[in-house]
Image (cartoon, rainbow, N blue to C red; front, top):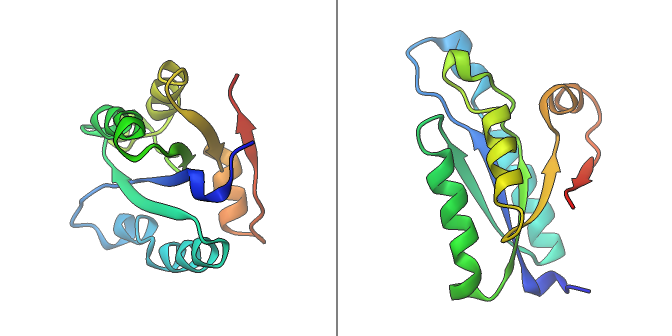
Length: 132
């Protein structure tokens, strides 16, 4: 069993740069980042908030997978990407690529698609799906 000091958590969050205040509102994660900081500090877990775009999600995931050899820590990925590729935000494509990389990553998918949106506007709780 892994100890908390043997993992590094990566929180993948969708990123979209626009000039539209209404859309930008949905991509403002400042409050969420502060909440994650508190939780991971309390648990003494190393973590990183990682914005991803439709253009760089594969590179980001590949980089996470490659950190195992340099850090000797098992990556745990919380995927918050719930967008749709048609409108330029990462979503299902991230899940599919994480599944493709699962041999080199210990992957937890957190708050996927509709579950993420439901929990975002209610009392948050942890929803975890372990890929085999």
